[in-house]
Amino acid sequence: MTAPIQLIDSHCHVHFGRDPEALKQRLELAKALGVAQMLCISIDETDRDEVIQLARDQPAVLAAAAIHPTHDPGKIQSVDELLDYCSDDALIAVGETGLDYFHIKGDVDWQKQRFINHIEAAIELGKPLVIHTRESMDDTLDILESRQAHQCRGIMHCFTGNLEQARRALDFGFKISFTGIITYNSAKELQEVVRQLPLDCMLVETDSPYLAPVPYRGKANQPAYVVHVAEKLAQIKKVSFQDVARATTASFYELFPQTAL
Image (cartoon, rainbow, N blue to C red):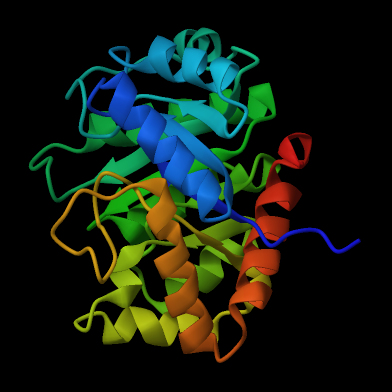
């Protein structure tokens, strides 16, 4: 018997809004459209426990936690603090963490040190990283490389960099995850990156409720819409939707084998 085609949304915030009925509807629609699992990301202390509990209550939901680069500006959590923060068995990854020079201006030394501490915690915990980087790709890659992040690997979330940067990330074992941005007419350069990269290094995500793909651009995003990201990726790569679903699911499970269905 052939296994059904399934997708994994490698990055979402499905819990945002704290509306139980809306959450139920989002999860049901995702399941109906073949989204078998989704990695739900906690951004700081305000939602960490909520995400952990959601992962325990909902088989389709996986969980990750860290302190988002734009949250608690100037505060540097120690490695020991992050080890405790990210150690719960329900958390399969440390993230999202990284650097953000778009929202945070001026001094970035504290961002870099906090990012380094997240990397060290992830390596010690043996959990992959989920990387947020905005207007900071080269610094992000330099830190990942210098701090030997190949030891834990991870996901380059919402990738918008160039081909050289993508290949650098691949060199130390990271997966490249694409959002609905690739469906936008203005994203020609990013679409070319998709065209050039091997399919077996890619993941698809929504980053919901943000970055809704065409035809929902401008509206609230949700995990079900990862189908449109996969369809666009298939179009760009000139392969079937089934090929994209199989490849991106296999890539996710290669990084997180304990989550395979």
